[in-house]
Image 1: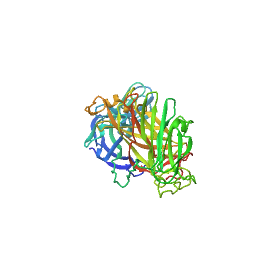
Image 2 (image 1 turned 180 degrees about the vertical axis):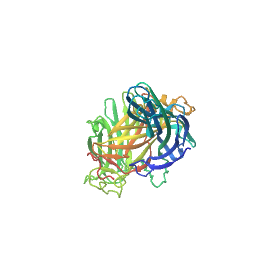
Image 3 (image 1 turned 90 degrees about the horizontal axis):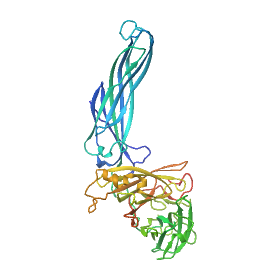
Image 4 (image 1 turned 120 degrees about the vertical axis):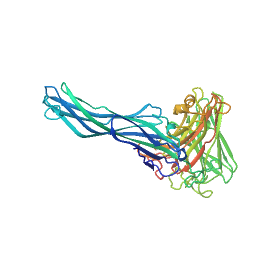
Length: 506
């Protein structure tokens, strides 16, 4: 008789907010029965209304119980070597072997030559009663089986077999007898991101990045040969202010800074190779400072923009700066903890986004590769950042991946994963009618969430970061825009230098 159990819990170490992954587990069992048996094991599918399924952990545990007997019928003494075991095998939905677990027990007995009676006793025979052994093994989706098999409102039914595989060896002739009973337990755990509570949910607020702020993040600059980046900052109101530019080098996260005085309604545009000729590429941020004291202050009147030119490919794209509002009254200092770090914590400046949502990517080929720009916003110079991906095709199928970068990176989608490839997307259960008007070209969308940031001494769970997709339709034509954001988190900072990151952060 099969039984179910269900448990829902938050994965260890993750807070109970909208971005946390949750886990839901089901169990089915086949009770102890004489081998050889064939049974079906079933668990409910993952209800997509709960959220987005990331992965499935599948564990098959097997146990055996019974007895083993043997008689040495040779005239010579020797050893009876028992291997008491069974194979318990689980098959996937398509009938392919998924997990094999082999509970087993080894026993060695020295016996005399045959005593004339096959009674599995005396001086030449052995009987072992009340034997038992256990074993388990695991598989996962999407690594071993398709994730889609486990999504729906029905059940997942998997075939399971148990086969007795016991044997005994000894001196010459041996008579043996085994009684083997086997049981199996199937555990299926769904790891998922709970459904978004929506913009009015209690744990999910959003930030308007397209309004003036006190700190602007420019996701990239490129000073390499044949490249140029045009950066603009504008003071749309308020008093005279110093715009403090901080360039961050992609290679080592070192900084180079400069000041620009902006009067009310002033705008300043520069080519980055002339403003900062010492770095090849990376990102920059600009924040308002009091012209007399040099303190970082609230001045929510700054807007900005960048345009990147590729003289070799003769292409260009542009991106608005990412705006962070200063918290407090106009002119108030923002460095509340006096650490000379711009804290994106809702106390000094707006919080960083929790998740990044990119509404479209095109199926990638070797001749057509779009790029993702990453900026690490938790930890600082000494930290690497790992980002979790949920990659959706055009028919609600979801695939997971992760990517790790140091400080800043611009990387092609195919370097991150072949899951973005045109060929892979065509092999999925995609919508054959999309893209409408160009059905031969695949597309999808991306959900990004911070997994971990770490230095040699410190680990930050769910780090803040920013990401922008630069999309290419051919080698010369590219376009970019700020992504959508979901919720906020308060552990961002620009830019700590130590191994502990921003030690004032929660």
